[in-house]
Image 1 (cartoon, helix red, strand yellow):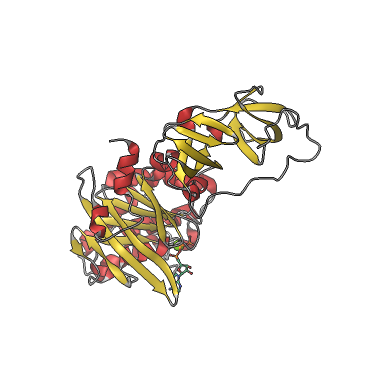
Image 2 (cartoon, rainbow, N blue to C red):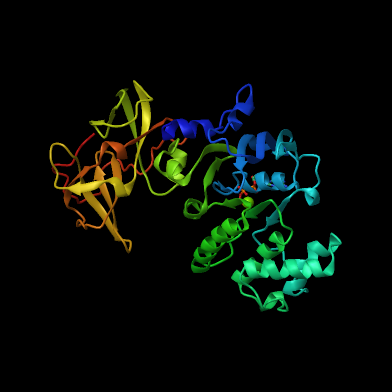
Length: 395
Ligand SMILES: Nc1ncnc2c1ncn2[C@@H]1O[C@H](COP(=O)(O)OP(=O)(O)OP(=O)(O)O)[C@@H](O)[C@H]1O
Ligand SMILES: [Mg+2]
């Protein structure tokens, strides 16, 4: 099956008559959680719209989207802190909606840790177990194990205010996994850490998920974090799912301009497919590998790292370099051509003001259906003043 069909099966943005069909899984894997047509409003504002997706057993799945798109609300519904207005949530095939939070086999790690400052590390982790009336020896052994998992052996007697941000985060995770949940819900758990600590914790969390063998549902608005850690990413916008897929699917085959733009740097240009495998944009006609939109206006996305720069020729998109920024590994350059300004990432440096030609391979042209987010951005009316525009494409 090609990647489009696979994605299409997992794609559940528009549940129709029988939303259950969107819970079909071509791999036959067990689904620990199924979310079916969830709607939720606060007052007159609908914040979740027909949310439908499944979570496979032992999967690392990430809800990704901008602030306010409904990620935390979705997570809170899974945890049981919030009830949907309509729709259902199934855990191993059983509806969860009447099950109170403390009886669900899920635990949440919150962004601000929610640790008790007046208790030490041990008592913070023990808190949930003590109220469940678990025997003292069992508690001691489970906490020992949890502290080992989060790499905090020897910290049991420390006070919370004697810990670094990263250590507090580990205590919060230990407190959640000590309950032996089947599913761990993590709401922006690394949001308060500095970049270096974030990166370290990303790797550790992923390792932890593998060694614990449990399902992680992770919330973030950081696309790089989502791409690095997840088996599956659910991209959300304004309460609606935009795309569900593996990090590679989402990056290479974004379903619309919103996803393309949200997941990394993109050149998104309006175009038209006159026939299968033929697309026109930037005033030129190209061969591509898509065949879904015959004679239709489309959006075309080309990633900055997929564009090669050469001397201008009759067969290249021709423009002039308007900006060059060194980014460590590569240069990021803007090239004005016609009404569009292309972003290119390359290890070769071209001077500002130089005339260049742009080329790319057919497989790097990705064609998408038009959507609300179709671009009219990054389009200066004319090339920047004072530049030599001779030989530059005008379209
Ligand atoms: N209890 C509530 N009462 C009223 N409105 C709420 C409540 N909880 C959330 N909202 C609103 O619902 C929308 C979705 O909120 P949610 O917290 O799910 O977003 P989010 O994707 O987690 O955003 P962020 O990345 O900022 O955490 C927002 O507009 C928010 O203001
Ligand atoms: Mg949130």
